[in-house]
Image (cartoon, rainbow, N blue to C red; front, side):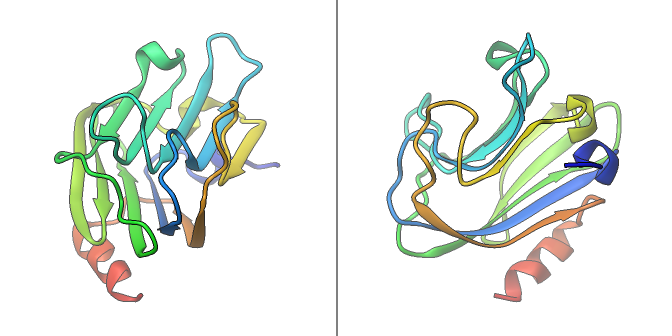
Length: 167
């Protein structure tokens, strides 16, 4: 729907969500925004269980060149989210041509990528914008979601900690 993320968050952006995973299924998405009709594929997603590396863990990914050119934020110490418990996941993408993207889990830095260059605006208009499902035949998210937020700026570490404390 108009205006889309490219207008709502043209530069810096923060995604924040509470997730209560019922079962960890490979590649289940918290969110997935993109265009499956474009070549190369254009998308960004947050999964609770990336199925590529062992152990499976939370991963954020963004690309305009398909899965071989993804910019990812993986956990520094990969681990699966505990099931039947609420976890707060925050992805912070600051402004800049090259910047450090940060993943927070439960108020603590869980992963970074200091070579990020893409933002949601880089994707252009996206036709497939989903919570709890993938654009591909991955399983639906088997979890509860609560308080999904998109900020038009990069939250600071102190703001992420304060947001987590609001639970």
